[in-house]
Length: 350
Ligand SMILES: Nc1ncnc2c1ncn2[C@@H]1O[C@H](COP(=O)(O)OP(=O)(O)O)[C@@H](O)[C@H]1O
Ligand SMILES: [Mg+2]
Image 1 (cartoon, rainbow, N blue to C red):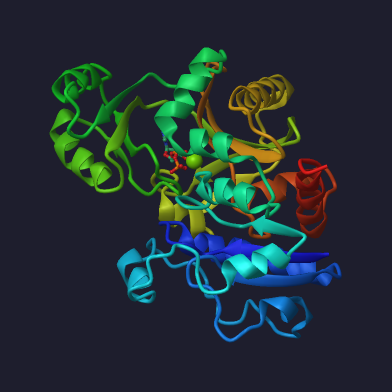
Image 2: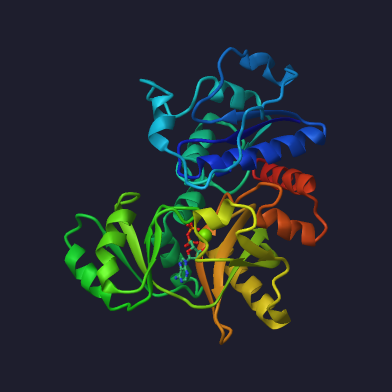
């Protein structure tokens, strides 16, 4: 097949996406496909979209490992100069030549449904869920409303919107949640804009930082327990993974620096808890209207209560990422998983 793997972009998860994209690109190439890896935001110069799949070229050349800090987006924006079009040079004509676009994007403009909506209108087939469920899941407050309406347990929370008429009222409500609590930007990802605070004294600072990412911020009850995540493919749960950072919580650094988090797959939580987590995550997938695949984050408390935090509609896809680990547990290699995602996604268009 002629496949474009779309990565990069201009979100805080840009670097992670480039690594996901490189992994998917190499695996699909190895399996005999004609694959082009593109940075959706920066595009590519000097190619003829008509013949791009015939080029013998390593498209992953120059992509670097994920750094300790999330990328400086102003520097990335500056590389585009005056160009106001989000899509980089030649991206759309090349995508229009592909049989399918593999979405290896994470975060804003990629995981939030905007590209999916644009592609629907342009007739470009893509992997993963549709534009609406993507948009719903990109907003953690909206996601939680769907959780609540579908009997999916989720931590208590209050949403605060900067500049809204009920700002002070919501803040007063939020303070009743108690401490520790979690302050998070609603549209974040990779723990960027997530702060765990121990007292009201830290609230102002955490809010200010969270508001620098989004005008909508969630103040959530802190759930003490074991952190889990569960991939769902076509509505069915994969084995659960437990994530245990060596120090601190599962923040950006602990997510992407080798050795900083212990990931156990399958999670050693017993059959009963496993079945419960899988059932709740499948329900979460269903109530959010998700199709093809996603990964749901959850916490299991000492009493065996499960709380869902959020859904990742384009979860990390590096060969060692959580979803590929879970797939391996059921005998699906990384390359097979990439192909399986493509096959499932093609079904949407039949
Ligand atoms: N309510 C909560 N209780 C305890 N830990 C939390 C809670 N919310 C978030 N966290 C921690 O912060 C991390 C990131 O939060 P999450 O809601 O999954 O956002 P994202 O992964 O999109 O940045 C989680 O993996 C977890 O370690
Ligand atoms: Mg998460």
